[in-house]
Picture (tube, rainbow, N blue to C red):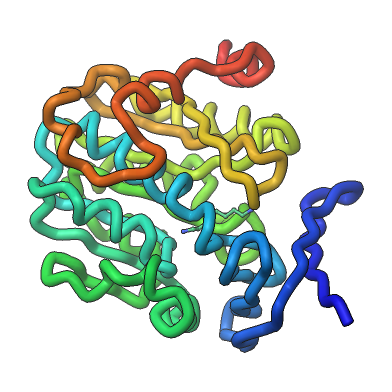
Length: 276
Ligand code: SPD
């Protein structure tokens, strides 16, 4: 008998993966947390039936959400990840020697537990000495942190349920206040192809508070449409200005200094979403 998992990505389109079975499935206080094993992507973390990360293609998302802002900041020492309980962003952040402290603020402890148990390749950085894991509401944490972080990464789920507040202008204002003088934020901002209005709206909300706001993209096979957007807000630094030399030592599979620059070159229909 063949078993297939389908994530309904829109009302009319889904992604279907042949599965080997379900490794865990648990209702937490916030959502259903599950890990399944698939033929194409190996183990896959699902939250409320939506693919969050997969063993095979997670490197693309996590390298692009972490290394782009860390490459732009001249000397990132303190970094926060809001969400991202699988630990993939943290694993990439601690590759940067300048980072003294990386704080993960995840609201749902079950996501961290499932990732520690079933996705050790992704969660392995969580035990690093420089990492602090807080089980807490990221919105409140950011509201209470002033002038604290050099880089803030918003590694959220889609804007439904607990993540809705992570896509608001008020939250981005608090992120601005939580950043130090040369601070930079990045948020995952969904599929420009399937969610153009959301991408446009989110960009405008970040742009309302940050002097420099830029959208960049990466290609993630397990995410809706493959093309995925990230929005970067910067207080002072130019997102296109990076020190290639400093980045040569990074061990990555997707991110390179050239990919960094290319990621900001947008197809016309995407550029039009963020051009006033
Ligand atoms: N459609 C799913 C988008 C999920 C984005 N966040 C994933 C978290 C991985 N660390």
